[in-house]
Length: 67
Image 1 (cartoon, rainbow, N blue to C red):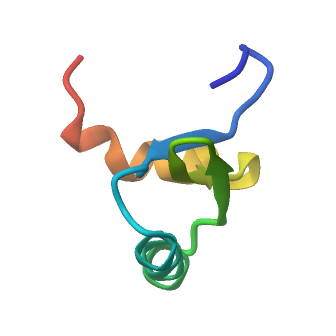
Image 2 (cartoon, one colour; image 1 turned 90 degrees about the horizontal axis):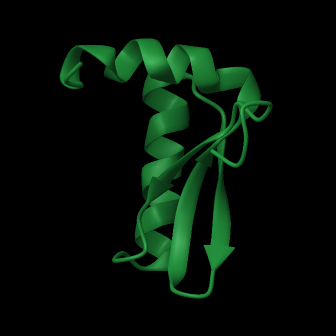
């Protein structure tokens, strides 16, 4: 997250190919109806969860996070 004002979330997937990350993005969209997009970085590609889906994404992953 860039600041307290930005809600978008980033999943660091730089160890995967562009094609693999694109497939994962499509699966996230299809299975969970979470809006995300491919983000190119110097070290590879990331998944950016768009602000409009940030709350839905947070609720989805909350059971798997430690407090």
